[in-house]
Image (cartoon, rainbow, N blue to C red; front, side, top):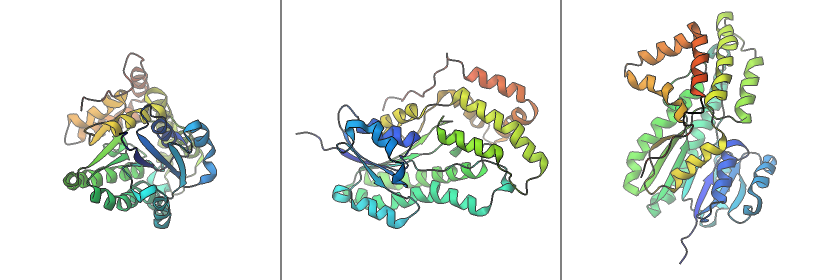
Amino acid sequence: MATPRRTVLISGCSSGLGLELAVQLARDPKQRYQVVATMRDLGKKEALEAAAGDALGKTLTVAQLDVCDDASVAQCLSHIQGGDVDVLVNNAGVGLVGPLEGVSIATMQSVFDTNFFGAVRLVKAVLPGMKRRRRGHIVVVSSVMGLQGVVFNDVYAASKFALEGFFESLAIQLLQFSISISLVEPGPVATDFEAKLLAQASTAEFPGTDPDTLGYFRDLYLPASSQLFRSVGQSPGDVARAIVKVIGAARPPLRRQTNARYAPLMALKALDPSGRLYVRTAHRLLFRWPGLLRFSLRCLACSCLPSRVRPRPE
């Protein structure tokens, strides 16, 4: 008797990582998954449908879902056969970069509405069914910025820190119900979304920001950030493959970082629990030794270094 396919609900599939993940799962050689690929605006579904090819309508369906809207979440789940989700992938997210003084509170709240409360809203919707069935897997696309702060990414990092604390806390309870939680933590991911975000930030005015801070942002941070993406950035396909392995694992990990080339930057924080080493080193590299920072990024980009974190045996 064939094993029933696991229903996988993925948010944020109009492009980038969400699109890649939906297609990879739908094209699983063993056909283990029935993918519900969702997006807020169905007007943007053409790229996903083209990439899905003959999987469309068979192992992949496209649905509308706004993670910031309770009614939209309920409507989406009502169209899933049986209403049961075996694997939830919280991928929908928005970015925000820039000097704090030039970012409104309303804009900050909108980031949290999507990145944090959007994920919480989906979990609250699927959790009763998972608990009733005593099985399920919740996958969260977090970030290394959920583990370490990055200059001029204050609000975005805060939203990812919030995810990390929330889901680590929830994971303890859900073990009692045989439900797994996995936080996948990519470093830089080279997508059109990221490129547009940096391009928009380079021309934004950020009213209320002092000239020195605006100069640091435009003249130091933006060039360094662009080089970071070129040096250690992964493709959406690489990150999607890491998530596919997490979903298919017999014992899913709580955390899985995807980019080995980013590990040296993460190590600074781990080496000194006080946090002083990481903060002072990051400050000096950006503000005092930008030449050394550029050289370090070129070294990290060396092809002799692995770009992916190889999964540990489960």
